Length: 219
Length: 415
Image (cartoon, rainbow over all chains, first blue to last red; front, side):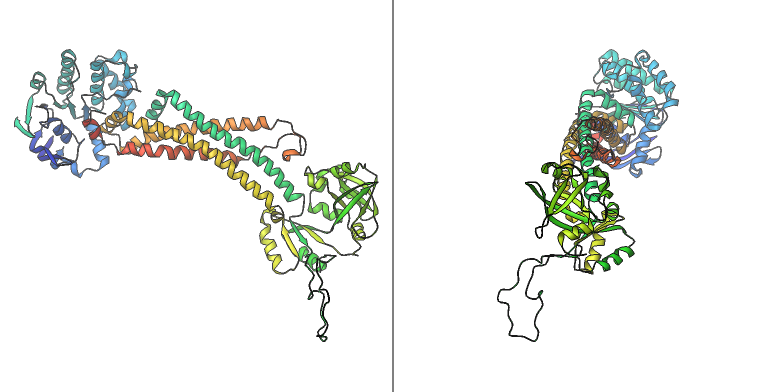
């Protein structure tokens, strides 16, 4: 469970307030969409909740652990073991193959061998097992995003945070991605929080949170 | 993180290869040039150390003054009409027995040889050459220097203890047109020329020694000089020739004689060695520093190009120190490969240069080939320079990569 209390985020140089005091709770196994207009603070909120941005006022507790109280090693271990990220720009490492990209978090954790069968299974689920040994630089946008999802899931994380995961994809590939999210949420119980500006995709979530001007307007 | 570093390097084969070649050239140049220069220096140093005494005790060549000629204390009205001037005509070791006792009792002294050194004119028919005659006991002289090593005809002991026999430098003999067993006439400037028979020939490879020096027995040199049993020098060999300055300093405190170490005598040559070393090190370090700048540039560009990768790695739990390793390892791998290949290529260069034939006696060679030093310290230094250059040029871009915050990169869309 992730709990945020009095969350405020300001940006330098003029301390421009983007998140203006948000209280929210994300229950385990939930499937949440964050929606809102550009500049509403939805991506910023996602990064605050996911530990990528720890420079804020207020409190964020992940599984009862205060994010501010964690040291660098603890935060990185948490990201490695419990959190998976999917970004709008999929950020695969072009010099690696598809399979190597998927295994990157496991490589950091020193659990390559035990993760290898699951990596192949994940690639099979996302429909890319036939190109596991191809360089990731040769993939299409949709394939890239599916690899990024497999990579986010390789450590069987408790939480997946996705920032506009379909932002660069056509509707067919977008549907594929959301079906994958739904499947992992259902099959693995993974808590999924995603940011989208697409109303259709937003409505697919169990919990829809709308933001406007740094505040939650609808929950 | 080595896995990622290798992948980044292999993805840029051309750039990586160019950097490796740069480091290789610098390392090979250091090994090759050092091998040649130090080979030459080692042989020359060996000659400097062992061809002559480690320490030379010589008679003081004081200028004459009124005081040194004695005085007339009771006759205050006696004055010099023309005061004495110039040098004493017969410099000598004042108390050689005392020196012999001192040298016999000094544990650092391995051997010593009393000598009479005098400038002479060698004459054969109408030809004459000026040079230096060294009178010594052949058994003692052989223990002090390695002159026997340079004998080309006869043995050093052939000159015996007396009998007016000389051992002459090959170049001197040739310039006089003489041959072994011939008789030369020697004069020290005063007295009639005396005949000396050539019994052996030496060639050290040092031209100014070979064309001006001859050896004879101590008693024959004393006779030629006309100064009885006086000696002008004592040549001393010590246990550690590279630690002579301490010995000479302590001896100088208790003696009026001129005491010079081989290092003081050869100071000008040793200073040339130092200059050679400075040039050698500067040149090769410059090459490697240029290669180091290559590493720095490539890694700096790579850090900028790989901002997205840094962001995703950090979001996956890779620590800042892991990011440092990804980039730092690349510099180290380039330095390691370039350094090792450079050592091998440098060694091959040395082996090749070592086969080049040169005139015996030149470039410090006794064998007719260039003398090359394969001292392990050359290889260690070359490799250390390559690695240091790689470390310093890799560390800054790697630390820059560490400072990048994933949020800043993601917010900028990975740009």
